[in-house]
Image 1: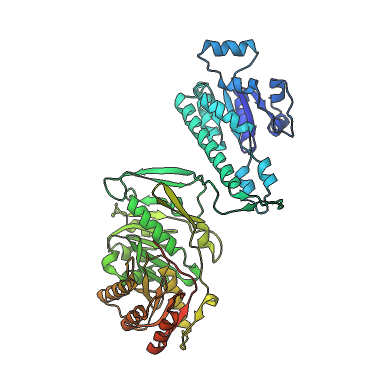
Image 2: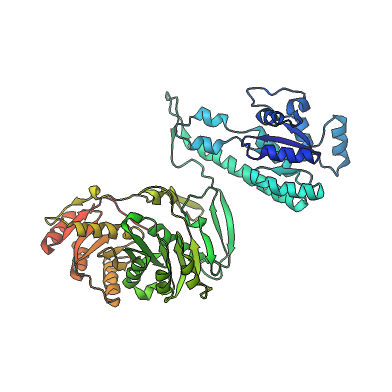
Length: 531
């Protein structure tokens, strides 16, 4: 058996080569890989010796030769193929170990130039991988160090790889080539040259968008039972994203579970832990209760109080350790999914008898106050008929210094905190969104209505149903009030301060109404539509 090894990432390559040598496999290699193996005392044949041609053009041409590709592509069961190899003194290559130039990590670096990117586009590597993967019945092709161990197990046991393994390796190889080519296409098609400017300008949205997602699991069905569905993750998922969750117990997650869990998790991780524990309860993609507390128990209890009816069968997310006290309180209600960065053993024991409750452990993104952004998508995508809408994600974080007080009355420090809390929650509520808050707790949430007035009325009705008073509350509106009637509705309900983006042609009319009603109002300057 002959193996050709040519890798950029040298992880595990020496150990693999040593194991192959011990099995009697003849080693062929290129450039730096060959030198590394030779330095370890392994007998290795340089590709240049095999082809009869030296590496040339600064290493751009090494393996682009018939003696390499014929050795990979020859079908062993076809006599004519084997006769051709014999006629031209070409040996078969039975195992190919290749990983590619680090194009993706190169272009991800700050200051990467076009020349840097071009020199990290691999030519010979993908060509060999394609050849080996095409001839998968005769050639095993390894494109990642994670594959080495299993391949060695089979070779040591049987002296060869099973067809099942070789086919899986071939599929993985073509997937890797697709990922690599997509990265190159995305990068290059994001660049544009202007005459007289030696450096190309780069756009966030490339002329051609190529996405790569890895299937995690098939789902029982989609949004409705007559629809099929599956869950995929990004090729390189961000830390703190829902797809990195570990399910500790419960039934398989459904399509709707995952969609609602993502909404809850994105909202709860936006709260800095320094402000205390946060709890978000979501139903049908909308937060129906959000609160801060000194611990998980207080945060959950306050969040649940906002809308106990909607919380039934909801999705619960916490940004702090879930202990036994909080678990006992949560277990009194019907919950579909429960998420937290960690759980005590006692808390998990509480839910052991509730075998259907899906419990997910998700690590919060590492970092400081803006760590929540690390686990968010940089770009959001929505399907339309035969197309895509793409936009930068709504990752704007409002700071107190961004606010503009537009009324005679200024919000107190306590009101300012409630306004910022309400604004943060409103960002995750479907438009039109109206959110009443007080004391770090939602008091009424109106979501997804065609009229902002209706959202305001629904929020008030929800509060009344939960037995909550809206007197002295802060209100957030995800977009401006086009008329004073929206402001009048929330003030009639009990609001004493309001945050909204501003920007309406009738802003002054709304400001005058706020002054007339004796409430404070601030403009954020930023809208948060969520469709």
